[in-house]
Image (cartoon, helix red, strand yellow):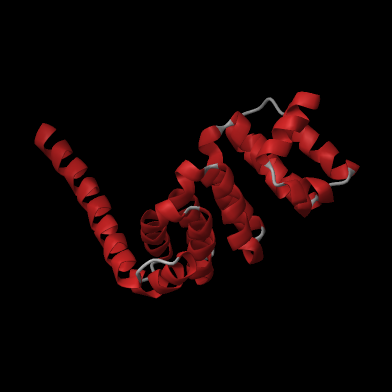
Length: 190
């Protein structure tokens, strides 16, 4: 048990752990003991967070420790359950799955498109190296123009607004081309 608590304390923010009482710890322990599939773990995590919002980071850590590819599904379900906390949810998940930061931001924006710019800013502040991909993913998922999202992100992370917008638009084009290419290759092989 001590090792799992140590692991949690490394992954979850210290502030969240300090706020957690015994009841929250027990709930996260339920997740720790969970042996089912990814969908079940995600559903249980939502229940844990609904019962104890302060345990969100610890619950996310437990799910991602068991299912590293669950970041997008976890984001979608948590934002659906807590739409008013979309930015916070996206940041918590992306902090623990930084390689999937853009996908996480996009998943949150797809559920809460009216918060798209705020989601992009929050996740980009934690993952500035992925800012281009984050802006592109959020704009795409929320059906919002890149130009509506890039300025606030650029200001938040201290980069040139025009360069960020152009790079994000190019990223969207590259993504679209990649999809078109795969369609073409399927036609050619057929």
